[in-house]
Length: 576
Image (spheres, rainbow, N blue to C red):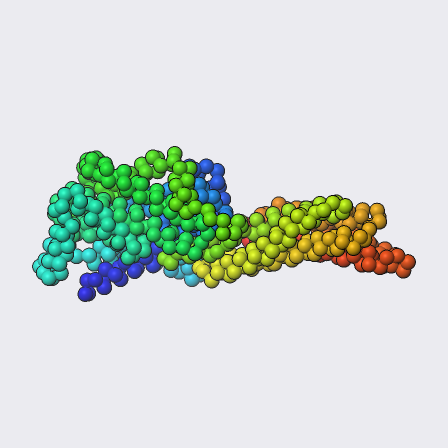
């Protein structure tokens, strides 16, 4: 029982270190990682590199794939693009095997404790990036310390036979049950790898357990056979890690479910072809391992332990790399298969809904902000498009534009939904481990979302005013029409600038131009409304009131556009 708790505690330190390190590196390099995600749409290769880069930094393929599922759920990644990222995530997670393979080459505790010692004062003294660096170093040190404890906690089976014969006999009986069945034994160990990954909810942790057990003799005495068993378990872990994304997609939309299925399909296809060539491939990897330098292979005079560890690392990396090379050409076909797997039923909303999807172990709080930013950009584009739709309706008073009015009403309703979704999402982001700069920026983004929603409300009120004008047969004079069109030109320019520079660095002259446009719209509103008040004495009061309402709404939209550009400028400046 004590041994089990020691193993569990060591694993806990390892996983907690991974979590702390991941959160630190996101705060430290979040901007670069966000830019990498933004470039994922270029081609399949860039998608693979993005998945590799992200997973290599956060040390969790599960976290990366859950992020991919959430991006697809929000409509910010297509199914085809997501498959490339998932492929790269599979390769990125193989780094863990290489880290574990170094166990025994030197004392991990000797480097882990000093690293924590360096990170600890930095974390408490420094601010912003310095604090994030300290957090990263503490997590990095804890990860290595957990591996070192795990190495010491998992007993050598020969030692265990002497110290605890009953437990050793129990382990040996299970190994004998799985072994001795020829090729079928490897299939059984593969299933064991799936179960192990489901239990610990981390392929990295499962990999650490597998290699540690292998080098401590739990899988037998013959090093080559031990390596083959480890390789089979690793194949199972490749399938087991897909379950996290599958579970995350349960409450998501159809495309997100397809992305999770694509992850499973990609890994299962890889495991199937590897099982066909398993004996020959593992023999080749073992031969490569035999040619490693003796200094690399030796662990305190024991060649066998290091050979098994490095052979497993080579197998894991080469298998995933070759699987990518083989299947990257068939991404469209994989997409078609999962589309047939989860067909369209016509009951789901055409517009993707933003939904915060969390991964319990390593939550990508920093990177999840990317999803919100892209959703805000989409909301801004729709707002700009909606304003142009209003102008079109105003300029064609004699035509039946009821279909256009209905479309604009639908856009306003979607804006209300998006404000609710994005605000709720950003609030959930703020409860995660994020840097102070991002906490401030989240508040700014919530303000931008509110301003955009107010814009869409105002635009739809303008549409209703024009519709009332049409239904009541109220005619504007040429002077009034020209006045409204001049206002729409000024306001349209403000909205376009706000949309173009949303969440981007805003040059000072651009901010100045929006200020000028807002002041211009205010002067026009006052001037036109004053003229309308003068005309009310001897004219149509209803028409003049309609005219002043339109002017007031247009000027208010210009105010909202100025607020949006100011908040965007603040976000950009905080990022440097």
